[in-house]
Image (cartoon, rainbow, N blue to C red; front, top):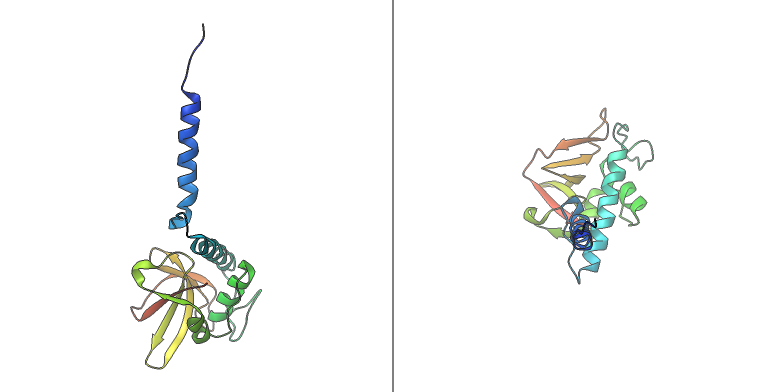
Length: 157
């Protein structure tokens, strides 16, 4: 007795589902013609993983890794390891990114904290209103809820 199945059809459908799953991995949808955005998303996702891997590393003012970090040192280190160069300070990094509205933010974008005096802190957006950052002296690199509404977002190009 021969059993006939629709295996080729099911495999084709499974392949399409897998391709869609990969294309939306990390909440980022890739569409034809957006090669630069796709590349930036991949770099940002890699930088986010690098920052997360530094969980527990001590804060040290002016430190740029690999074992100690200040806020902009963590973002600089993470993106450099992912293949993108950033300037040293949070304010300089803000100037080097493409500014985006909060509604367009995605994992791996930079979160800039500002006051009347300008940009004073930076972290890497991790999704769900949280970010990886090196907060202050006496603390360590950690995942934390974004605590202020006085933030801007920037996408590394």
